[in-house]
Image (cartoon, rainbow, N blue to C red; front, side):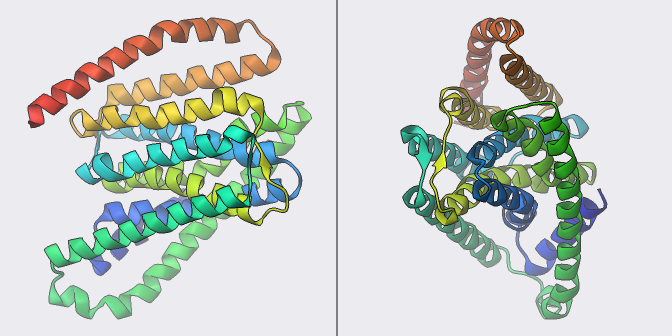
Length: 338
């Protein structure tokens, strides 16, 4: 929490001094910094011959980020969503999720696929840079801000590094302990990656988003989650697949269940954000309930409990109703805007 507080405060001051929107800082600096533990874990897991942990942690982290982090932040304060996120960043997150799903269809991610993901990352960073330049031209900074940027940046960047360092250290300590406990319980690598590792590596994003929501900085809260998901898919999976000696193998269960769920969660966020450009407390509660159902299904399926089948049958009724409600609210929002 101390690291998140330092990071959010520094990010806000950096946005003011560099004269960029807080959303851009959340999508780039905060998102990239909070993704650092995920990158470290995925690289270590891949080099130690545990590709299910490397891939599963990214998939589980992306699901956790949208359903739990945004759900909890929306319970604190309803989140306003900017038009940029709905028109650009969320469609890019959906496209990146679909790209990873498509590249994984052959059962592995090799160096070619990793290079392709990194090219997508470069294109996304170039888009963010263009947006920041456009904002600076449209809304020029006051002369006092421009004059003080040089003196200001060194201290703020040190605060950013301190915040990221505390977040990474805390996440690393918790991750080691959680993985040891999960291993002692006899959980498989896939389940450890999807749950324990994914949640622990998402704690920096969780802390940063909740602190931002408590401070009323809704753009940073939402931007951190969307940016982190994009960095997870493009940077973490791309770099891991590129530098590891062997291609990352994708388990059949991940192809049949986990990757479609990740893509579905990414697609779900678009109509929710589009209807009113906000996430209400009720929608936040729905997100949390969906993650609870997903977590229970993963646990029940692993232990061979009949609860897994019951949850699947329940989802056959719940998901169509949810789809109809989202379609109705999306059409109503479109008519209101046009």
